[in-house]
Image 1 (cartoon, rainbow, N blue to C red):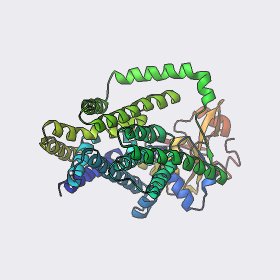
Image 2 (cartoon, rainbow, N blue to C red):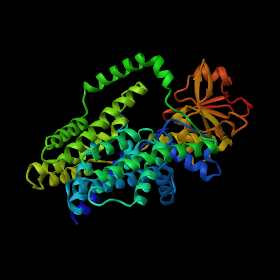
Image 3 (cartoon, helix red, strand yellow):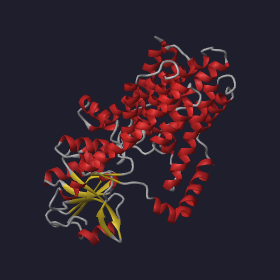
Image 4 (cartoon, rainbow, N blue to C red):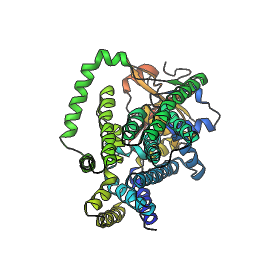
Length: 469
Protein backbone atom coordinates (compact mmCIF):
# COMPACT_ATOMS: atom_id res chain seq x y z
CA UNK A 1 0.00 0.00 0.00
CA UNK A 2 2.81 2.43 0.86
CA UNK A 3 4.44 1.85 -2.52
CA UNK A 4 1.28 2.69 -4.46
CA UNK A 5 0.68 5.76 -2.26
CA UNK A 6 4.12 7.13 -3.11
CA UNK A 7 3.63 6.15 -6.75
CA UNK A 8 0.41 8.16 -6.87
CA UNK A 9 2.24 11.12 -5.33
CA UNK A 10 4.96 10.86 -8.01
CA UNK A 11 2.42 10.79 -10.83
CA UNK A 12 0.46 13.70 -9.34
CA UNK A 13 3.63 15.78 -9.05
CA UNK A 14 4.64 14.79 -12.58
CA UNK A 15 1.26 15.85 -13.98
CA UNK A 16 1.59 19.25 -12.29
CA UNK A 17 5.20 19.54 -13.51
CA UNK A 18 4.15 18.82 -17.11
CA UNK A 19 1.65 21.66 -16.87
CA UNK A 20 4.60 24.01 -16.35
CA UNK A 21 7.38 22.43 -18.40
CA UNK A 22 5.61 20.74 -21.33
CA UNK A 23 8.07 20.48 -24.24
CA UNK A 24 6.70 21.79 -27.56
CA UNK A 25 9.92 22.54 -29.45
CA UNK A 26 10.66 21.17 -32.91
CA UNK A 27 12.53 18.07 -31.70
CA UNK A 28 9.91 17.20 -29.08
CA UNK A 29 7.20 17.25 -31.77
CA UNK A 30 9.00 14.99 -34.27
CA UNK A 31 7.15 11.88 -33.12
CA UNK A 32 3.82 13.72 -33.15
CA UNK A 33 4.50 14.93 -36.70
CA UNK A 34 5.45 11.42 -37.83
CA UNK A 35 2.35 9.88 -36.25
CA UNK A 36 0.02 12.46 -37.81
CA UNK A 37 1.45 11.96 -41.28
CA UNK A 38 1.29 8.18 -41.05
CA UNK A 39 -2.33 8.42 -39.92
CA UNK A 40 -3.18 10.75 -42.84
CA UNK A 41 -1.85 8.35 -45.47
CA UNK A 42 1.89 9.11 -45.42
CA UNK A 43 4.54 6.42 -45.29
CA UNK A 44 7.75 5.88 -43.36
CA UNK A 45 9.90 5.75 -46.47
CA UNK A 46 9.26 9.42 -47.22
CA UNK A 47 11.12 10.56 -44.12
CA UNK A 48 14.68 11.80 -43.70
CA UNK A 49 15.87 11.16 -40.15
CA UNK A 50 18.88 12.12 -38.06
CA UNK A 51 21.24 9.61 -36.42
CA UNK A 52 18.51 8.97 -33.83
CA UNK A 53 15.17 8.34 -35.62
CA UNK A 54 13.41 7.80 -32.24
CA UNK A 55 10.84 5.45 -33.75
CA UNK A 56 10.80 2.79 -31.03
CA UNK A 57 9.27 2.83 -28.49
CA UNK A 58 8.40 6.53 -28.89
CA UNK A 59 5.88 6.08 -31.72
CA UNK A 60 4.23 3.21 -29.85
CA UNK A 61 3.84 5.33 -26.71
CA UNK A 62 2.61 8.30 -28.72
CA UNK A 63 0.06 6.06 -30.44
CA UNK A 64 -1.36 5.10 -27.04
CA UNK A 65 -1.50 8.80 -26.10
CA UNK A 66 -3.30 9.58 -29.36
CA UNK A 67 -6.08 7.18 -28.39
CA UNK A 68 -6.44 8.87 -24.99
CA UNK A 69 -6.25 12.57 -25.90
CA UNK A 70 -7.86 14.35 -28.86
CA UNK A 71 -5.58 17.41 -28.93
CA UNK A 72 -1.79 17.54 -29.62
CA UNK A 73 -0.94 19.33 -26.35
CA UNK A 74 -2.80 16.73 -24.33
CA UNK A 75 -1.00 13.97 -26.22
CA UNK A 76 2.40 15.43 -25.34
CA UNK A 77 1.41 15.55 -21.67
CA UNK A 78 0.02 12.02 -21.83
CA UNK A 79 3.32 10.81 -23.33
CA UNK A 80 5.15 12.39 -20.41
CA UNK A 81 2.86 10.61 -17.96
CA UNK A 82 3.40 7.24 -19.67
CA UNK A 83 7.18 7.71 -19.74
CA UNK A 84 7.09 8.78 -16.07
CA UNK A 85 5.02 5.77 -15.03
CA UNK A 86 7.26 3.31 -16.90
CA UNK A 87 10.45 4.85 -15.49
CA UNK A 88 9.02 4.56 -11.96
CA UNK A 89 7.87 0.98 -12.54
CA UNK A 90 11.15 -0.28 -14.01
CA UNK A 91 13.25 1.63 -11.46
CA UNK A 92 11.27 -0.03 -8.66
CA UNK A 93 11.85 -3.47 -10.19
CA UNK A 94 15.56 -2.70 -10.56
CA UNK A 95 15.82 -1.65 -6.90
CA UNK A 96 13.86 -4.71 -5.80
CA UNK A 97 16.24 -7.10 -7.55
CA UNK A 98 19.47 -5.26 -6.79
CA UNK A 99 18.83 -4.82 -3.04
CA UNK A 100 16.30 -7.61 -2.34
CA UNK A 101 13.51 -5.23 -1.32
CA UNK A 102 9.87 -6.22 -1.14
CA UNK A 103 7.68 -4.80 -3.89
CA UNK A 104 5.97 -2.11 -1.80
CA UNK A 105 9.23 -0.75 -0.39
CA UNK A 106 10.86 -0.72 -3.82
CA UNK A 107 7.97 1.23 -5.35
CA UNK A 108 7.97 3.69 -2.44
CA UNK A 109 11.72 4.37 -2.58
CA UNK A 110 11.66 4.64 -6.39
CA UNK A 111 8.86 7.24 -6.26
CA UNK A 112 10.55 9.14 -3.43
CA UNK A 113 13.80 9.30 -5.37
CA UNK A 114 12.06 10.52 -8.52
CA UNK A 115 10.33 13.25 -6.52
CA UNK A 116 13.76 14.50 -5.45
CA UNK A 117 14.88 14.57 -9.08
CA UNK A 118 11.86 16.40 -10.49
CA UNK A 119 12.94 19.99 -9.57
CA UNK A 120 16.22 19.52 -11.46
CA UNK A 121 14.51 18.70 -14.77
CA UNK A 122 14.18 21.36 -17.43
CA UNK A 123 14.75 21.83 -21.14
CA UNK A 124 17.83 24.00 -20.63
CA UNK A 125 19.91 21.17 -19.15
CA UNK A 126 18.22 18.47 -21.22
CA UNK A 127 17.44 16.23 -18.24
CA UNK A 128 13.71 16.35 -19.02
CA UNK A 129 14.42 14.32 -22.16
CA UNK A 130 13.40 11.14 -20.35
CA UNK A 131 9.80 12.40 -20.37
CA UNK A 132 9.66 13.72 -23.93
CA UNK A 133 8.97 11.72 -27.12
CA UNK A 134 11.74 12.23 -29.65
CA UNK A 135 14.59 12.41 -27.15
CA UNK A 136 16.30 9.63 -25.16
CA UNK A 137 13.36 8.45 -23.05
CA UNK A 138 13.10 5.20 -25.01
CA UNK A 139 16.79 4.45 -24.44
CA UNK A 140 16.42 5.09 -20.70
CA UNK A 141 13.45 2.71 -20.50
CA UNK A 142 15.45 0.11 -22.43
CA UNK A 143 18.36 0.59 -20.02
CA UNK A 144 16.18 0.07 -16.93
CA UNK A 145 14.38 -2.92 -18.45
CA UNK A 146 17.58 -4.62 -19.67
CA UNK A 147 19.45 -4.10 -16.39
CA UNK A 148 16.46 -5.43 -14.44
CA UNK A 149 16.28 -8.46 -16.71
CA UNK A 150 20.04 -9.00 -16.38
CA UNK A 151 19.87 -8.98 -12.56
CA UNK A 152 17.10 -11.56 -12.69
CA UNK A 153 19.37 -14.01 -14.48
CA UNK A 154 21.39 -14.59 -11.33
CA UNK A 155 18.32 -15.89 -9.49
CA UNK A 156 16.56 -17.79 -12.24
CA UNK A 157 17.81 -18.14 -15.77
CA UNK A 158 15.38 -17.00 -18.44
CA UNK A 159 14.35 -19.24 -21.27
CA UNK A 160 15.91 -18.59 -24.64
CA UNK A 161 12.58 -17.08 -25.71
CA UNK A 162 13.11 -14.39 -23.06
CA UNK A 163 16.68 -13.88 -24.28
CA UNK A 164 15.38 -13.35 -27.81
CA UNK A 165 12.73 -10.93 -26.48
CA UNK A 166 15.38 -8.90 -24.64
CA UNK A 167 17.50 -8.83 -27.81
CA UNK A 168 14.51 -7.79 -29.95
CA UNK A 169 13.54 -4.90 -27.65
CA UNK A 170 17.14 -3.70 -27.32
CA UNK A 171 17.87 -4.02 -31.05
CA UNK A 172 14.77 -2.06 -32.05
CA UNK A 173 15.62 0.68 -29.55
CA UNK A 174 19.22 0.72 -30.79
CA UNK A 175 18.05 1.21 -34.37
CA UNK A 176 16.07 4.20 -33.10
CA UNK A 177 18.77 5.69 -30.86
CA UNK A 178 22.52 5.33 -31.31
CA UNK A 179 23.13 6.01 -27.60
CA UNK A 180 21.94 2.46 -26.70
CA UNK A 181 25.42 0.81 -26.70
CA UNK A 182 26.65 3.38 -24.16
CA UNK A 183 23.52 3.39 -22.01
CA UNK A 184 22.32 -0.22 -22.25
CA UNK A 185 24.87 -2.71 -23.53
CA UNK A 186 28.03 -1.36 -21.87
CA UNK A 187 26.43 -1.01 -18.38
CA UNK A 188 24.71 -4.42 -18.65
CA UNK A 189 27.91 -6.17 -19.70
CA UNK A 190 29.76 -4.44 -16.88
CA UNK A 191 27.10 -5.46 -14.35
CA UNK A 192 27.24 -9.04 -15.61
CA UNK A 193 30.81 -9.33 -14.32
CA UNK A 194 29.34 -9.48 -10.82
CA UNK A 195 26.91 -12.28 -11.72
CA UNK A 196 27.29 -16.02 -12.25
CA UNK A 197 28.81 -17.50 -15.39
CA UNK A 198 25.49 -18.86 -16.69
CA UNK A 199 23.77 -15.51 -16.17
CA UNK A 200 26.66 -13.76 -17.89
CA UNK A 201 26.32 -15.98 -20.97
CA UNK A 202 22.58 -15.20 -21.22
CA UNK A 203 23.25 -11.44 -21.00
CA UNK A 204 26.08 -11.46 -23.51
CA UNK A 205 23.99 -13.60 -25.89
CA UNK A 206 21.13 -11.10 -25.77
CA UNK A 207 23.56 -8.23 -26.38
CA UNK A 208 25.09 -10.02 -29.38
CA UNK A 209 21.70 -10.87 -30.88
CA UNK A 210 20.58 -7.25 -30.51
CA UNK A 211 23.29 -6.26 -33.00
CA UNK A 212 21.62 -8.38 -35.67
CA UNK A 213 18.18 -7.02 -34.80
CA UNK A 214 19.48 -3.47 -35.09
CA UNK A 215 21.01 -3.90 -38.54
CA UNK A 216 18.04 -5.90 -39.84
CA UNK A 217 15.72 -3.08 -38.71
CA UNK A 218 17.86 -0.39 -40.34
CA UNK A 219 18.01 -2.46 -43.57
CA UNK A 220 14.21 -2.73 -43.59
CA UNK A 221 13.71 0.98 -43.01
CA UNK A 222 16.10 1.80 -45.84
CA UNK A 223 14.28 -0.63 -48.13
CA UNK A 224 11.15 1.39 -47.43
CA UNK A 225 13.01 4.50 -48.62
CA UNK A 226 13.77 6.13 -45.29
CA UNK A 227 16.98 8.17 -45.23
CA UNK A 228 18.96 8.08 -41.98
CA UNK A 229 21.93 10.36 -41.32
CA UNK A 230 24.94 9.04 -39.40
CA UNK A 231 27.85 10.58 -37.58
CA UNK A 232 30.32 11.93 -40.12
CA UNK A 233 33.58 10.39 -38.96
CA UNK A 234 35.47 11.99 -41.84
CA UNK A 235 34.26 15.41 -40.72
CA UNK A 236 35.34 14.67 -37.16
CA UNK A 237 38.80 13.66 -38.38
CA UNK A 238 39.19 16.89 -40.31
CA UNK A 239 37.74 19.20 -37.69
CA UNK A 240 38.34 17.21 -34.53
CA UNK A 241 40.66 19.75 -32.89
CA UNK A 242 38.21 22.63 -33.34
CA UNK A 243 35.29 20.51 -32.15
CA UNK A 244 37.13 19.37 -29.03
CA UNK A 245 38.21 22.95 -28.28
CA UNK A 246 34.60 24.10 -28.49
CA UNK A 247 33.47 21.17 -26.34
CA UNK A 248 36.13 21.89 -23.71
CA UNK A 249 35.12 25.54 -23.51
CA UNK A 250 31.46 24.63 -23.04
CA UNK A 251 32.29 21.95 -20.47
CA UNK A 252 34.42 24.34 -18.40
CA UNK A 253 31.67 26.95 -18.48
CA UNK A 254 29.13 24.35 -17.36
CA UNK A 255 31.30 23.15 -14.50
CA UNK A 256 31.60 26.70 -13.13
CA UNK A 257 27.99 26.33 -12.01
CA UNK A 258 27.71 22.60 -11.34
CA UNK A 259 24.32 20.97 -11.41
CA UNK A 260 23.18 19.79 -8.00
CA UNK A 261 21.71 16.77 -9.71
CA UNK A 262 25.17 15.72 -10.90
CA UNK A 263 26.63 16.34 -7.43
CA UNK A 264 23.96 14.20 -5.76
CA UNK A 265 24.38 11.49 -8.38
CA UNK A 266 28.13 11.38 -7.84
CA UNK A 267 27.59 11.14 -4.07
CA UNK A 268 25.31 8.12 -4.53
CA UNK A 269 27.93 6.40 -6.69
CA UNK A 270 30.59 7.02 -4.04
CA UNK A 271 28.35 5.40 -1.40
CA UNK A 272 27.78 2.37 -3.64
CA UNK A 273 31.46 2.01 -4.49
CA UNK A 274 32.26 2.10 -0.78
CA UNK A 275 30.43 -1.21 -0.40
CA UNK A 276 32.39 -2.99 -3.14
CA UNK A 277 33.99 -5.41 -0.69
CA UNK A 278 30.89 -6.21 1.34
CA UNK A 279 28.39 -6.12 -1.57
CA UNK A 280 30.26 -6.50 -4.87
CA UNK A 281 27.09 -6.08 -6.93
CA UNK A 282 26.65 -2.55 -5.53
CA UNK A 283 30.14 -1.70 -6.76
CA UNK A 284 29.55 -3.20 -10.20
CA UNK A 285 26.32 -1.23 -10.55
CA UNK A 286 28.08 2.00 -9.56
CA UNK A 287 30.82 1.27 -12.08
CA UNK A 288 28.21 0.61 -14.79
CA UNK A 289 26.52 3.97 -14.10
CA UNK A 290 29.91 5.73 -14.03
CA UNK A 291 30.59 4.38 -17.52
CA UNK A 292 27.44 6.15 -18.66
CA UNK A 293 29.04 9.42 -17.60
CA UNK A 294 32.16 8.71 -19.64
CA UNK A 295 30.07 7.67 -22.63
CA UNK A 296 28.14 10.92 -22.34
CA UNK A 297 31.39 12.85 -22.52
CA UNK A 298 32.39 10.83 -25.58
CA UNK A 299 29.15 11.43 -27.47
CA UNK A 300 29.22 15.12 -26.54
CA UNK A 301 32.77 15.36 -27.87
CA UNK A 302 31.71 13.77 -31.17
CA UNK A 303 29.00 16.39 -31.49
CA UNK A 304 31.31 19.21 -30.44
CA UNK A 305 28.95 20.30 -27.68
CA UNK A 306 28.35 19.77 -23.98
CA UNK A 307 24.67 18.81 -23.79
CA UNK A 308 22.77 17.59 -20.74
CA UNK A 309 20.66 15.15 -22.76
CA UNK A 310 23.67 12.81 -23.07
CA UNK A 311 23.79 12.47 -19.26
CA UNK A 312 20.12 11.62 -18.75
CA UNK A 313 20.79 7.97 -17.90
CA UNK A 314 23.50 8.81 -15.34
CA UNK A 315 21.26 11.29 -13.50
CA UNK A 316 18.10 9.14 -13.61
CA UNK A 317 19.94 6.04 -12.38
CA UNK A 318 21.79 7.72 -9.52
CA UNK A 319 19.85 10.60 -7.89
CA UNK A 320 16.63 8.56 -7.32
CA UNK A 321 18.65 6.08 -5.26
CA UNK A 322 19.50 8.72 -2.63
CA UNK A 323 16.56 8.12 -0.21
CA UNK A 324 17.29 4.38 -0.17
CA UNK A 325 21.02 4.91 0.36
CA UNK A 326 20.38 7.27 3.27
CA UNK A 327 17.96 4.77 4.81
CA UNK A 328 20.58 2.05 4.53
CA UNK A 329 23.06 4.33 6.28
CA UNK A 330 20.48 4.79 9.07
CA UNK A 331 20.10 1.01 9.40
CA UNK A 332 16.79 0.84 7.58
CA UNK A 333 15.01 3.75 9.26
CA UNK A 334 12.46 5.30 6.83
CA UNK A 335 13.16 8.95 7.74
CA UNK A 336 14.69 9.77 4.30
CA UNK A 337 11.66 8.19 2.63
CA UNK A 338 9.25 10.31 4.64
CA UNK A 339 11.36 13.44 4.07
CA UNK A 340 11.33 12.83 0.31
CA UNK A 341 7.54 12.36 0.41
CA UNK A 342 7.09 15.63 2.30
CA UNK A 343 9.37 17.37 -0.19
CA UNK A 344 7.21 16.02 -3.01
CA UNK A 345 4.04 17.37 -1.41
CA UNK A 346 5.59 20.83 -0.93
CA UNK A 347 6.92 20.86 -4.49
CA UNK A 348 3.53 19.76 -5.84
CA UNK A 349 1.88 22.66 -4.01
CA UNK A 350 4.36 25.15 -5.52
CA UNK A 351 3.60 24.24 -9.15
CA UNK A 352 1.09 26.34 -11.03
CA UNK A 353 0.13 25.68 -14.67
CA UNK A 354 1.45 28.31 -17.06
CA UNK A 355 0.13 29.55 -20.37
CA UNK A 356 1.86 28.02 -23.41
CA UNK A 357 3.18 30.88 -25.57
CA UNK A 358 3.91 28.47 -28.44
CA UNK A 359 0.24 27.47 -28.60
CA UNK A 360 -0.80 31.13 -28.52
CA UNK A 361 1.49 31.96 -31.47
CA UNK A 362 0.17 29.05 -33.54
CA UNK A 363 -3.44 30.00 -32.82
CA UNK A 364 -2.74 33.60 -33.85
CA UNK A 365 -1.16 32.48 -37.15
CA UNK A 366 -4.14 30.21 -37.83
CA UNK A 367 -6.55 33.05 -37.09
CA UNK A 368 -4.80 35.27 -39.67
CA UNK A 369 -4.54 32.62 -42.38
CA UNK A 370 -7.93 30.89 -42.16
CA UNK A 371 -10.05 33.84 -43.43
CA UNK A 372 -7.63 34.28 -46.34
CA UNK A 373 -7.69 30.60 -47.27
CA UNK A 374 -3.89 30.26 -46.99
CA UNK A 375 -2.30 26.94 -45.95
CA UNK A 376 1.08 26.43 -47.63
CA UNK A 377 4.14 28.23 -46.30
CA UNK A 378 7.68 28.24 -44.96
CA UNK A 379 9.22 28.73 -41.53
CA UNK A 380 12.34 27.92 -39.57
CA UNK A 381 12.71 24.36 -38.21
CA UNK A 382 11.01 24.84 -34.83
CA UNK A 383 8.19 27.05 -36.11
CA UNK A 384 7.44 24.74 -39.04
CA UNK A 385 7.08 21.71 -36.79
CA UNK A 386 4.94 23.60 -34.28
CA UNK A 387 2.64 24.95 -36.97
CA UNK A 388 2.22 21.56 -38.63
CA UNK A 389 1.50 19.65 -35.42
CA UNK A 390 -0.37 22.17 -33.28
CA UNK A 391 -2.61 23.24 -36.18
CA UNK A 392 -3.63 19.56 -36.43
CA UNK A 393 -2.97 19.40 -40.17
CA UNK A 394 -4.68 22.64 -41.16
CA UNK A 395 -1.34 24.11 -42.27
CA UNK A 396 1.40 22.64 -44.47
CA UNK A 397 4.63 24.39 -43.50
CA UNK A 398 8.02 23.34 -44.88
CA UNK A 399 11.13 23.94 -42.73
CA UNK A 400 13.76 26.13 -44.36
CA UNK A 401 17.31 27.23 -43.63
CA UNK A 402 19.65 29.84 -45.11
CA UNK A 403 22.54 28.77 -47.36
CA UNK A 404 24.68 31.37 -49.17
CA UNK A 405 22.12 34.07 -48.53
CA UNK A 406 19.15 32.14 -49.93
CA UNK A 407 16.48 29.88 -48.48
CA UNK A 408 16.98 26.14 -48.90
CA UNK A 409 14.91 23.17 -47.68
CA UNK A 410 15.91 21.98 -44.21
CA UNK A 411 15.74 18.24 -44.80
CA UNK A 412 16.17 17.00 -41.23
CA UNK A 413 13.73 14.79 -39.29
CA UNK A 414 11.01 15.60 -41.79
CA UNK A 415 8.66 14.09 -44.35
CA UNK A 416 10.24 15.04 -47.70
CA UNK A 417 6.76 15.35 -49.21
CA UNK A 418 6.22 18.59 -47.30
CA UNK A 419 8.57 20.36 -49.73
CA UNK A 420 6.22 19.71 -52.65
CA UNK A 421 2.88 19.67 -50.87
CA UNK A 422 1.85 23.10 -52.17
CA UNK A 423 2.14 24.90 -55.51
CA UNK A 424 2.74 28.28 -53.91
CA UNK A 425 4.52 29.82 -50.97
CA UNK A 426 1.55 31.65 -49.54
CA UNK A 427 3.17 32.81 -46.30
CA UNK A 428 6.39 32.77 -44.30
CA UNK A 429 6.86 32.78 -40.53
CA UNK A 430 10.40 34.24 -40.35
CA UNK A 431 11.30 33.13 -36.82
CA UNK A 432 15.04 32.50 -36.89
CA UNK A 433 15.39 32.97 -40.67
CA UNK A 434 17.35 35.88 -42.11
CA UNK A 435 14.81 38.45 -43.46
CA UNK A 436 17.14 39.46 -46.30
CA UNK A 437 17.47 35.84 -47.40
CA UNK A 438 13.68 35.57 -47.51
CA UNK A 439 13.44 38.65 -49.71
CA UNK A 440 16.28 37.46 -51.96
CA UNK A 441 14.55 34.11 -52.52
CA UNK A 442 10.87 35.05 -52.57
CA UNK A 443 10.78 38.81 -53.03
CA UNK A 444 9.09 41.32 -50.74
CA UNK A 445 5.88 40.18 -49.00
CA UNK A 446 2.56 41.69 -49.99
CA UNK A 447 1.74 42.20 -46.32
CA UNK A 448 3.49 41.82 -42.95
CA UNK A 449 1.43 41.05 -39.87
CA UNK A 450 2.77 41.23 -36.34
CA UNK A 451 1.34 39.18 -33.49
CA UNK A 452 2.33 37.90 -30.04
CA UNK A 453 6.03 37.10 -30.34
CA UNK A 454 5.92 36.39 -34.06
CA UNK A 455 5.63 37.89 -37.55
CA UNK A 456 3.69 36.63 -40.54
CA UNK A 457 4.71 37.55 -44.10
CA UNK A 458 1.96 37.04 -46.67
CA UNK A 459 2.68 36.12 -50.29
CA UNK A 460 -0.87 35.16 -51.28
CA UNK A 461 -1.05 34.50 -55.00
CA UNK A 462 2.25 36.25 -55.66
CA UNK A 463 4.88 33.50 -55.68
CA UNK A 464 3.84 30.59 -57.89
CA UNK A 465 6.11 27.53 -57.72
CA UNK A 466 8.93 29.37 -55.94
CA UNK A 467 9.52 27.11 -52.97
CA UNK A 468 13.19 27.08 -51.93
CA UNK A 469 15.50 24.62 -53.66
